[in-house]
Length: 241
Ligand code: NJP
Image 1 (cartoon, rainbow, N blue to C red):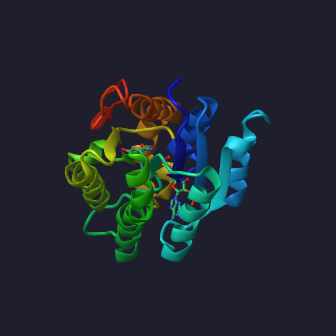
Image 2 (cartoon, rainbow, N blue to C red):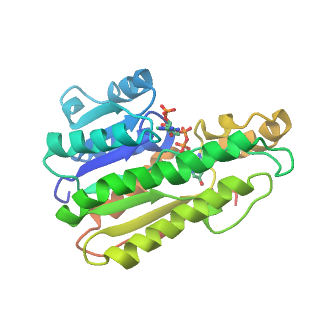
C-alpha cells in the first residue's frame, strides 16, 4: 500500500461514493464522507469492521450550502491534519426530453453537478496545494458525448471534465487531477428520473451496468498511483457497450 491519504468525498451515502469510501478505508486511507442523508451515511459506516470505523468520519452536508461546505472541509482538515485527496462525487441526472423538461430540474443538475463540484474544489484546493494532493472528479461517458433525453446532464458532465483539465493546466506541479468517466453503473442514480417511459427505457441498462465497486477500484488506483504517474482521465464502460 502507498502512504495513507486523508480524503474528502461528497455523495458518500450511496452508490459510487459509498463504494469508494468503503474501499478507501479498507485500503488503509482515512475518509471524511459527506452527504445529506445521515441515516444512509451511518449505514455505510456500519458496513466496516469496528476497527476501521474511526477511519470513516461521516458528516451531513448539502454541497449547495457554501458556508457549511467551508466548515465541513475545515473540520476534515482539522480532524485529519491535512487533505490529500478531494473527490467531488455528489451528482444526479434527471433525464427528460429538452422540450418537456422542468426548468427546476435543469437548475438542480447544474447546482449539484457543477456548482456543488465548484464548492468542493474551492474549499479543498488550498489544502490540496499544501499537500501536493489530488482531485478525483467523477465525470461520465456523457463528459465527451451527448445522449438523447439527457442533454443538460451531459452539459454538466462536460463541465466536470473541463474543470479537471483546468486544474491540470493551472496547478500543474501543485495539484494533480483525475477524471473518472463511467458509463452506466448499477446505483440509485436513474431513480431521480420521473418520466415513467424513460424510466422503463433506462432502468434495465443501469441495472446491468457496472458495479460501483469497479469504479471505486479505479479511484483507488489513481490515488495509489501517485509518485508513479498521473491518471488524467479514464473511461469505464459496461461489458454490453
Ligand atoms: O448515484 P447515487 P451514483 N448534496 O444516486 C449525493 C456519476 N455517474 O453513485 O445527499 C450532497 O447512488 C447523494 O447523497 P444524499 C453521477 O453523475 C453515475 O451513481 O444523501 N450530496 C448520493 O450520495 C454522480 O456524480 C453513473 O442524497 C448530494 C450521491 O450524491 C456520481 O456518479 C454514470 C446532493 C448520488 O448517489 C455518483 O452517482 C455516470 C446534494 N445536494 C456518472 N445531491 C451511473 N450511476 O450510471 C445528491 O456516467 N447527493
